[in-house]
Image (cartoon, rainbow, N blue to C red; front, side, top):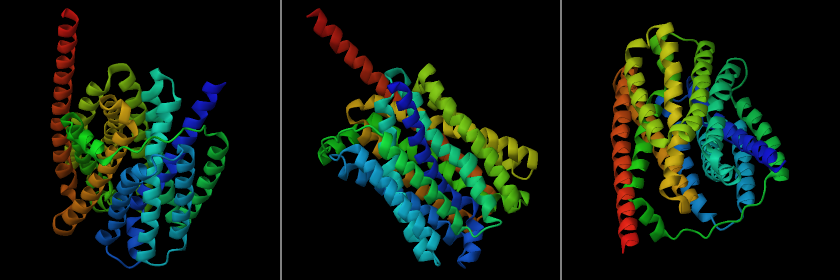
Amino acid sequence: MAKNINEFIIILLALGAFVTGTAEFVVSGILETISFDLEVSISTAGQLITIYSLSYAVGAFALVSLTAKFERKKVLLYAIFTFILGNLVAFISNDYIILMLSRIIMAMSGGLYIVVATNYAAQIATADKRGSAMATIITGFTVSLVLGVPIGTFLAAYLDWRNIFLIIAFVTVLLLLSLYKLLPTIKGNKPVPFKEQVQIIKDKRVLTALTTSILWILGYTMVFAYISPLLSNSAGFSLEMTSITLFVLGTFSFIGSRFGGYAVDKWGPNQTISISLFFHAVTLLVLTFTQHSIIGLFITLAFWGVVSWTVTPAKNFYLISLKPQSSETVLSFNTALMNIGMVIGSALGGIIIKYINIIHLSWIGSLFVILALVLIKYSFHLNKSDSRKIEMKLQISQEE
């Protein structure tokens, strides 16, 4: 009975990831609409994605550290409540500055939520299902690409785009009430001193793995943040056609995140991450040549969705395995740095489309994913070397 309740709670936590993901990514699908309505350029409107990612990083790292000692259920519920307020501010926004403020509120609370929720899932799951439990939270995030973003993009063609954020707020209120009733209490942890946090980063295995997070999401965001103008420019897609394309991309991203959880439980994180990043880089390179063909575009984006999101649950699992006693801290580092990667990716993408043709986005993005693959391989090498040293020390001590 308790197992079934915990599984349902994990699904609810994944729903929270879904609404935060929808709030973050839906702007990519309606970027041109917001740009026209608020009378700003597309590159300026794109900074709504940049500021969200930057604020998300602050929430994922700074707020997680500041709230570490507090009971985790209260922290999670307050994060959700603040997220609701942010969506309501977006709903009443009538200029660019107010919308930007709403993005900051949503992002900081969303960043705090996703780290605490992911750790919650790992804590209440059985030991052999922790990879799948964390993957379920990531799945909630990717389902926002499957349903939230394309539906939001479709609705924006017929309704005022602000209504999307009102709908998100309504769904999140229902989630808040459910989690308030069902979520078990987990005590807060003793805040990790700054010196200890620095020691975590000084571990070269962790440092290279975290840098990998920056690079792969940078390559991904360069393309995804500007997917609407890319599809419009390269394939002549309308807003409705863009919403269908995003649905396809999101569906296969969902498959990728679920497969990632299965793969890491069956084959381990090293193999899963390596294969995912390799094919991610190849797919972005191929997109350079298929973006002008409707059939080629759909096939490439479907494959991109699978390979890009397979890595996420495997990456979280790998990081926790490196620092099991500081799991929430290392996850907060990872989430924060991923969003810094998103900041750089969306900003760099904005520069590229301003000065260079938008068709070059995908192959440039693939270069960063290749760098990510090189770094994670180095992290695996360091981890393997450390494991051998520990084994040798144990053998020597036993012989003595």
